[in-house]
Length: 406
Ligand code: SF4
Image 1 (tube, rainbow, N blue to C red):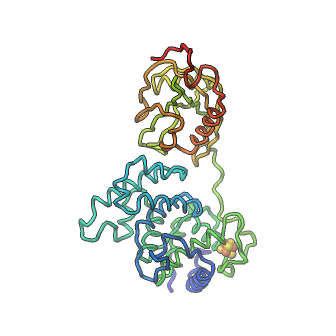
Image 2: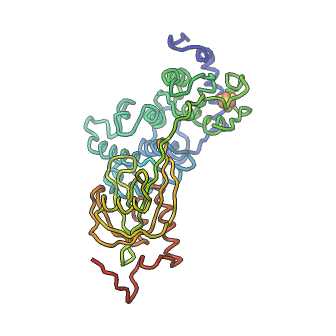
Image 3: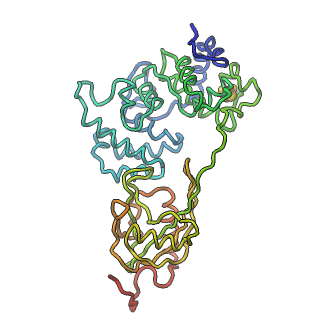
């Protein structure tokens, strides 16, 4: 085989070994691979033969779920999803809130929005060119919302056994170790794509890609690689160097911004709680939450809550005791939610910075999709309500209570 000109030291050694690496990986997968992943099987539960197509819909849903989440976490979500939306049409015509509810807990909600949006796009355009709703090429899949090259390649190789290389997080780690790559994977993407293409078995791309992902997920794991069980041990530069966990080389740590958010769990005299729905843009677009906002420099958290609720909902509240403090880390920022019970005083809530606001019975909160941090607030509120420990003047009005209600 001739060497691609851009391959450099560490990678060139792999060119001559590509066919042996393929053979040993496929032999390993035949015995130790994950062969029961439900969306990779025929309807009768058997593994597809080489070249035999599979239904792309369940694979597409699973691949999008897997973009930021591991297989064991995804499995129950995928089963629930397939029951609720068994095919493209069911998803395309589904209510957005139901889609978000079924995604609740998986995080990175933009993925759910884009999946829904892409389903509508596919349904609208189906059969226009006589090929059915599914794009026939890698480029066609990449043109759908939310699909990068690796996810699209994983879909077409899994569904249609097309020879497209993948480069997800697991594969990057394996290749970084195999070559003892001296730079972080994000700086080596071109070469890693070349290597993944070079290694791919053109005769069995579906099985090869699955085997590569399985190797990364079950043997060449981030903290404790089981090199003794690895079919590529004899060719692995990181193993030869004696310290596989040094690879992939990491980016220098960056400082992640930290913010404190004051949140009000506002109760009205009927014991209902106030929630608002975020605008559709952004990380958590379309989800519901308890109102609040960023603490300003030098501001007391109770003042933050009063100010934010006045600015964003045009209501006045009395801030009561702290309900809970929730720490939550995103990849790009860390947040601390300081949550206080609040008593609504006056003002009809207005959605000045949200799509809509609603007074809801605490028992009905499960019907609304919330971000993960809010789930802990709901649990704390329920615990407080169940214990009957609301402060004086908060929650349901008692007989004889003469608080004024607008
Ligand atoms: S030998 Fe170890 S470090 Fe190298 S690919 Fe295999 S499991 Fe990963």
